[in-house]
Length: 195
Image (tube, rainbow, N blue to C red; front, side, top):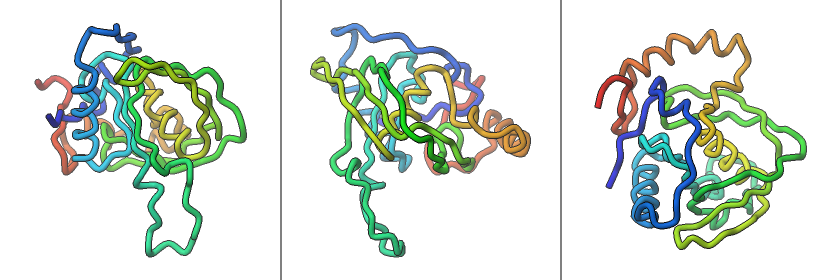
């Protein structure tokens, strides 16, 4: 099932999410639906609040970043992303460190807006998978960034919160337009005040 993506301005995107209980819902179905929703919108990550659910779950698939672009002269492929497709249930980032580096981020809930965000290069995260197995794993580079971006959604934070004041002022009208449904996203969205 493909969910509509919740647009910027909806209060659920600013709420702290709650932990999921083991047998509270069909986590495998939720995971499959979230991946289907994410792929239909050409995303690499999707958090539960972005589909209207106030729970600590996100999915990520960094495969698109691990594929070499034929037009790109850079031969380097981020090996941390090869096979990086996971569902994170009740995740908790235990450590973040390393040099902060910039990357132009975007968000399915905020179509058409991008901006450089600085994030630490390494993290350690504890989470459960859809079989309720617990893992503690280390990630670096782009995999860490995808996790940090999606994890922020679980805390009610968005990538635009990290942008410099001037950039925030420049995109203010665009953000207001998105919240009113004035956007040309090529996927289904749910806007504040509409169900």
